[in-house]
Image 1 (cartoon, rainbow, N blue to C red):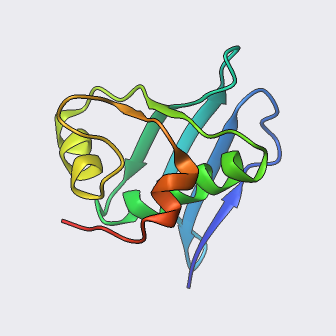
Image 2: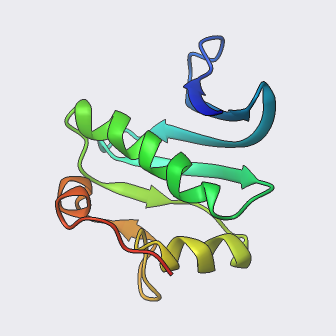
Image 3: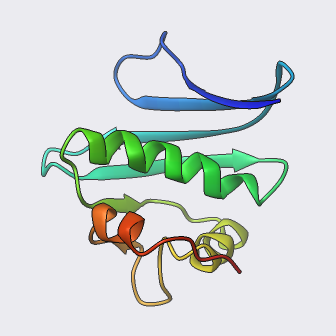
Length: 110
């Protein structure tokens, strides 16, 4: 069974770990900026399709706290391609202007 849980030992940033039957298979790290945005700074997984669940988890956390804008500070081209495929970002922008609008629009996958 796959689970995504926040790492309670890290207090200065959001760190979620994805596990499959206890084995780590991915993770995501984000920070809240001084401007009130969510900035995703790291994303990793051995399975690219897991990016969707990891990103949605951290976006849901932000939305529940009234944060509606996410910035993807990711430089890995493979990850960016997949993030575009999931509809989180576009070729023109690495900013998701409205998390709530994203969730309202439903699912999109490559």
